[in-house]
View 1: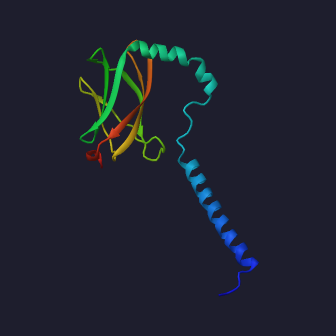
View 2 (view 1 turned 30 degrees about the vertical axis):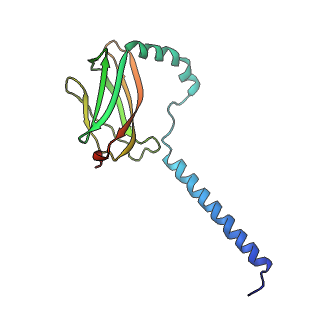
View 3 (view 1 turned 120 degrees about the vertical axis):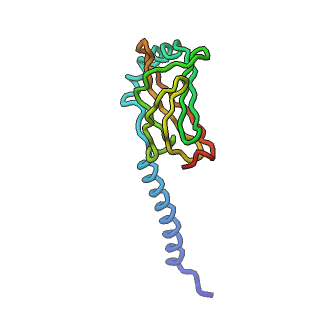
Length: 153
């Protein structure tokens, strides 16, 4: 067996720490590249109207839900068990951790629910919507949508 010398130990330490640094750098770059971004440009300004906006939205009394069935995203707005049809201003369907798979669903109202074709694999998805009631009240919500296995595209 050969003698273990100082340069052997230094090489092992260098390779070990080099591997750790390379992995950390790769993970940091991946995290920054896939970060979906900010929700608001200035959180202080957004906080000034948060309570009033929340109260107005809660006063609508809407029960909102979303699900996937037969390759379609279905979105229901109900008030006291009756379907309502607000104006959907924006809708983004995607993963919570990455914008790479984001989709902008185009909804059609069938009298009961809004329906939009989407492509979704199994797992958790988010639907971020901004809608407006007939009286002009803004409604914003992020809905977690669990895609069943049969929703795989």
